[in-house]
Image (cartoon, rainbow, N blue to C red; front, side, top):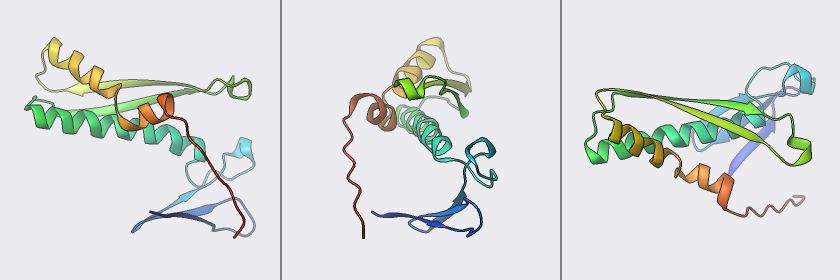
Length: 132
């Protein structure tokens, strides 16, 4: 699969992301020199974690027949030490439905094993950048 990102604003920093048939805008924050016309790359990174946790928990609960009615995952970012090598993300799961304490604990455990969480924390990523 190829993801394409192309400049969408010749005077600014807005870009268009194309993933399969999905398209959306990204931009830098005003502090980063942009106009905040879309999420920043850091926002997308953080959102990947939250969405993976939400989907993983939902699909697990469905497969196990758990009475999960709704899920919201919030991510709090602390990037104050990023330049020193530490990027902190805190995720908070809001689970609704008549779940007992054991089910809630199991869903919390499952959230910690979502593929993106593991990718961010356990996998060595190799990146190659070349000119076309």
